[in-house]
Image (cartoon, rainbow, N blue to C red; front, side, top):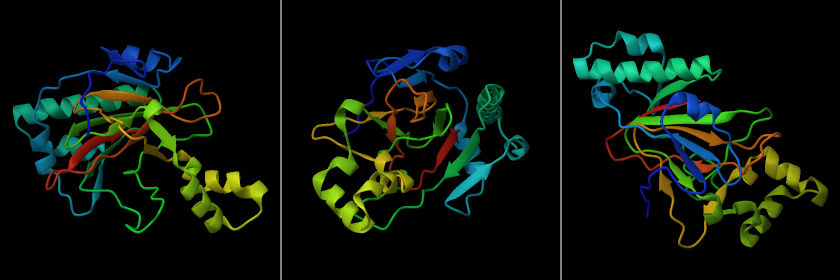
Length: 233
């Protein structure tokens, strides 16, 4: 079950403009900040004008600008380009993806580490994750209080130690090197939160200077026949 909550609460803070999105600090339990928006324009027209020969098509601003669009399609494009420019000026490196689906780990894997698994992002330097779904199924957050790090689930930890097969003192480094420690599972009764369509989010990640827990999130199951248009950095 996924709940569509307004972007409020002890973990999520709502803002009304880009300046506050980037300037509001992560403090206490707050590790997700949302510029809550209802966007105008025809984003579906953009999606329908872009060829999708692969599972993911990475678009640049020139390709987006070259699309022949209606007035509503142009309005949607202007919103995307404005977000792109705001994020770039902030020092981020946005990527616009049209996504049919992401690659998945083997269905028989006892520990999938693809983006459909609840996970946190990590960086060796202070930074944040920004994302906005303009069309298609939106990403999801799992509240930290409703998440358990998979590497501490006894049967999973035992299987990882068997896979590792080395000296005990190197086990934690093994978990980190293979990103196992970044993945989580929902606790019983957990209610993941939809990030919604059109909202621009800033999520805390795991880095050396972070004062808060990283935000746990995942890519959604795509709706059949409906790709996602996602700006992320």
